[in-house]
Every structure is written in C-alpha cells, then in structure tokens.
Amino acid sequence: MSVQLIPAQEATQRWSQALSAKPAEPLSSSDAPLTNQGAAKAPLPFDLIIDVRSEGEFALDHWPGAVNWPVLNSDERILVGTLYKQTSAFEAKKKGAALVAANIAKHIERHVLDQPKSWQPLIYCWRGGNRSGSLSLVLSQIGFKVHLLEGGYKAFRHQVMQDLESLITPFRFEVIAGPTGSGKTRLLQTLKTQGAQVLDLEGLAQHKSSVLGFTPNQPQPSQKHFDTLIWEQFHHMDPSRVVYIESESKKVGNLSVPQALIDAMRASPCHVVDLPLPARVSLLIEDYPHLVEDPVLFQKKLQALSPIRGQEMVNHWCTLISQGRIPEVVESLLINHYDPTYFSSMKKNFKQLPSALVHELKGHEIPHFQALSQTLMSQAKRGA
Image (cartoon, rainbow, N blue to C red; front, side, top):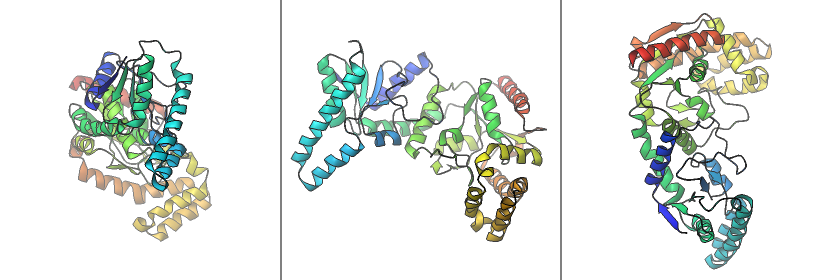
C-alpha cells in the first residue's frame, strides 16, 4: 500500500461532508483530550485521525475526535532537543530514531494488530514531517492505505481560522440577553434539551464571562482549542435553522470570541430575559456554590473589582461575606457592579436591543425556562 498526501482543505472538506451525510453527536463542551481507549471513531473517509505529536501539544489543540499516539512524548522531545543544541544534530537524530521506533512499536502492539487491511487512518504531526512520516511509512509497509495531512497541524490550524468566517456567515442567530443572574445559560440549556440549535460559548470556554466566572478545577482551553471547538460546532449545525446564543462580550474569561461571530451576534435580534431581583440572587447562589462554600476564595476573587468599584466597596462586600450574609453580597454586586456594566455594554454593542422582545419570568425554576423555550422555538418556526 502507499501513503497519500492530502491537503488540509481537502481533508477538512471530506470530514465535513461525512458529518453532513451521517451526523455525529457534538463533543462535550469540555472536550477533554481523547485517549486511545474509548476514543470516538472518526467519521469516514478516515477510520481514525491520529495525532502523533506529544501529549502536551495535543492538549493545547487537536483535530476534533483525534486520538493521541505520540511518537515522541513531552520528556523525549526535550531530551532530543537538548542533544541537538548541546551535542550535535547527528546524535540527536540517532537518539530520536531509537525513541520513535520504540514508540511506534508500542502503538502497533496496542492499537493496530486487530485492524483489518481496509483500515485507513489520517495521520498528522506539527508540520507533516518526520514524526507523522515515520508512523505513516511503517503502517503503509504493513499494507494499510495511509492518509498523511500535508502541512500537519499547522495547516489544519490555518484552515480552521480561514473557515470560521465562511462557516458563520450563513447562520441566523437569536441572542439571549438579560442582566447577570437572569438565567440566560439555563435558558440555553433548556432550548438545547428541547431540540433547538444552541452555541454555548461559556460552556466551550469553561468560564461564565465575569470576574467570578471561573469553573473550579477546570482550566480554560487554549485559545487555539477554543477556536477549534467553535469551528467544530458549526460543522454540526444546520444553516437553515436559527442558532440561539448568549449576549457575550469579546472575551469569555481569558479567551477571545472570533470577530466574525461577534459581528454576527451584535447584528442579530435579541430576547431579553427579565427575572425579579430576589430570583436572580437565588439563581446565582445556586450556580456559584464554590464561592458560597469557600468565603476566603470569594473574598480573594472580589479584590479584582477594587480598581473599578473602589476598595471601600470591596471591603464592605468582604465584611458581609465574613458574616455569612451571602444574599446581601450578591444583591449588592448586582446593583452596584454587574447591572451598570452589563446594560452599558449592551446598549453600546447590540444594534437590535431597542427592538428586543422582553420575556418576564416569575421565578428561576426550570419550568419557567421550559415554557419560555417553547415560546421562542414556536416564534422561530413562524418566522422561518
């Protein structure tokens, strides 16, 4: 058999066409790096997408659904690189070859021996050079038809960024707006469970878009992987149907939303969720249990607001926290910080906010959001 060199544009197009022909479930929002055990099988025309870079490179970003078969792990790459700099390229290549050969043998023993002759993987490394070429050569010599991604991950990354604008353009968005604590995320989740198309940027970014919006024990993905996750989501969605999205700013935690998506959101129709202040306080206490249960952490995170709201105000909030008066802290944060910031930003950035439909909810319990979700979906069908 042979190794077929395939350009990134052609590879991603074939991957996308396969998704359209046989829709797959989108990856979870966390998209934890896949291991070889239990990894989702890539859609045809590739039986498996294999990323041969180190585990550290793979964790930063990778083709959705790819498995990681490092031909040099992170420690081995450092070892070979040190030899290259401190000794010679020749010595580094000898050591690297020995390590690569040993690792390829392990991957074949673990993952390839039970594959049929018809098995066709797509393989890539950083630039489509030595690492992916080594595994491709061995597999092709066995008799498999191997696809080698021309330009490697670097070309894939370029293709993702090039695709994003053209992917976003055909879609119609409806923006879920409303002040902090009004249940925008709960509404998105309810819409999704009822079959609507939803793009949950906060879920993908592992952050709730505020100073207090971090997810405990869950670091945000890299910017590159965030871009890839958004790119993947659009491949799973139908341009003929509306997409519901939250009224995010340009930044979700430390991550930037692609400009094409920001522009589309800000030009789209809005729905404002109006929830009474006591219900908003209760909802936020439910959604941020890690801060309620850890007063010291809560007080520490609030220090970031001192340049904006003044140290005196922050000290007042910290005193209330130390006294266990959490609802009072949350209410004060909403009135004195979040609401003024949110409404100022919305009026400035979202063109259709003045004509937005306002949906008043009596409470923050799930049935209220289910009813509103059904209303929005019915309106979207009538307006299609």
